[in-house]
Length: 42
Image (cartoon, rainbow, N blue to C red; front, side, top):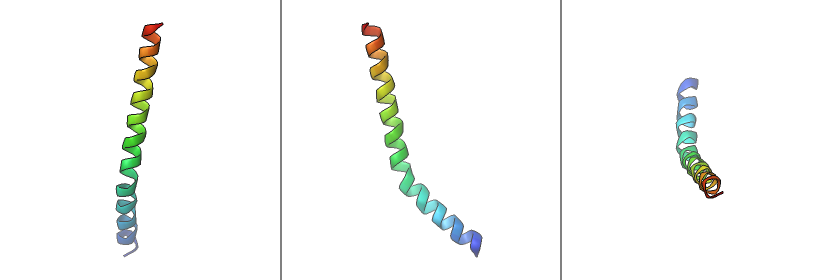
């Protein structure tokens, strides 16, 4: 019973965390791309 509740809370947390993680990854990719462009333009 305890493991079941833990699993349900973990899955719920994962569902809420996924979008933020994707947003952070996208933001990092954009930052890296901008840095590369800046480096090449110099």
